[in-house]
Image 1: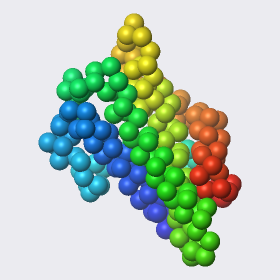
Image 2: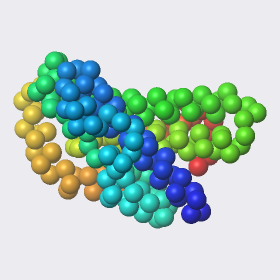
Image 3: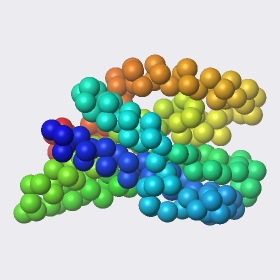
Image 4: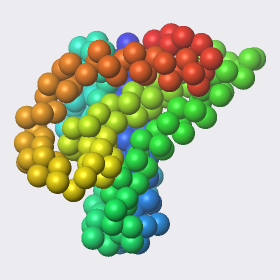
Length: 205
């Protein structure tokens, strides 16, 4: 059990690191070098780990058998005013992290789907990776700051909704608590759907 908890947390840490690095790479591609200059375009987890969001909270949720496995790394810094595309740049930077998690879920889902003959332990590890990354992708698409879904949503909405985004960003720490507590009714079914879509089998976890 202790080994399972450690492995879940390690998978989560690397997944959120890849998520954040993807934000930085997209920002760099779109003209903002802030993350690159800060040395944050690295898969070395040490510069990215947030003690609370990367270790304590995920371990606590696993120990509590929570139906939501949630965590975060230190946000990769970027300056939206440096982006060449001011209309869609923020949305693209926000979406990059979600797409990275979906790509990881897809790759390891294909291993499960077509990995007949592979060691059962490797299939189990792949299933955990698919589950964690699908869960992160779905959770981060929720349209509540500081999650990526809010960045994408308010980039699509007309500019007159900007004041709503600013208010939500100001009080994100209040909004995120009920999201963590009650988002399972949306996130878990969506995660199970993605798992079955990619892996070709029902979520075994």
